[in-house]
Amino acid sequence: MSSTSIPAKTQTQLWALAAGRCEFAGCNKLLIGDLIAGKQDGKFGFIAHIVADSESGPRGDKIRSPLLARDIDNLMLMCPIHHKEIDVDHANDYPEISLLAMKREHENRIESVTDMDADRAAHVLRFAATIGQMDSLISTKAIFAAMPPDRHPAERRTIDIELNSEIKDGEPDFWEMQSKNLNRQFKRKVKERIEQNEILQLSVFALAPQPLLIELGTLLGDIMPVSVHQKYREPSTWKWQLQQPSINFEVDEYSGPKDVPIGLKLAISATVDDERIRSVLGKEAAIWSITAKGPHNDILRRQEDLAIYKTHLRRLLDRIKYHHGEGATINVFPVLPASVAVETGRARMPKADLPLMIYDQMSGKGFVQTIRIIT
Image 1 (cartoon, helix red, strand yellow):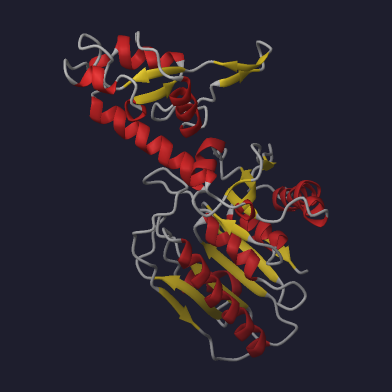
Image 2 (cartoon, helix red, strand yellow):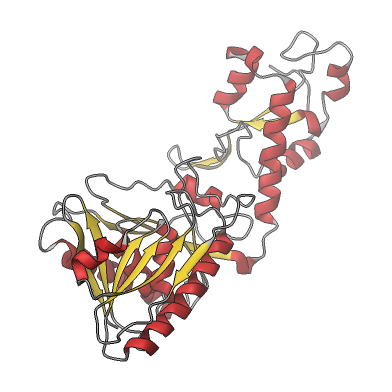
């Protein structure tokens, strides 16, 4: 362990640069205050040397150690566990270059977050429901890490809407019960706070069956700033992949008879054959569609593609209403990334657009009716 006395000014500067958190990669533990022990004002961090302050210490050097002993660029703020990890338990596993990279990444991230204006603060809405037999788990830590540089959390807790149920999606009352539960929780946890001006903008992180995601979008609407995030399988993250190619959307309009059932195919994650829709609506069905070239589960990588999709959908909803008239209902067949499903609901204009009947794919049954959206 270090025997060098670090000047108080340098210590204060390091604590500020690290925001009082452990700089070891993946830790980020807050080192100020211990509410459990009743020591809210205590400090529980250690100042660690990257190049030891003696040549016999970890990463020590006869010439450089005395030169860097009090240099802030050679110091890291650490929790007790990781201070011992890099200096005692596994010192050989942590060369100078690795620790410098940890320090740089941590302090750059803190600077980026604290540089944000107050108007970039967004409340975080976390929506999870059962998909088939698998419960959706959404990590708060992963969510907060995905928000910068455009947004940062307005508060340290998330607004949670959870729709876990013992009834499965193949049972008769499932969709009605889940829809009512979603509306009830949204009104109590989100809508009332929006009306009281407590929530000015939202960042949405959602994993749920497609019909519920679309209905959540209709509840959010387009009356306040909302950013909807996408969860990726590979790599497992909520961060946008800005350098990935854009989606090549393809929009097909129907021009046949007007008084026929309407099918709106939204197939971005996978291909949907029109015959699957006609097997539900009838051979005479009018099929309108937005599809993507080369669809797959992780196709949506860029936030800009959400806006492009929404523009296509907004125009298509207008065209459908113009062609089929005021009394029609749009049967929606979605195979979408979660964020696109939410934006599908947000694109709809209440009282102006046609009612929607949302279908969902069920194993062994094909597409089945789920939720009707009329307001």
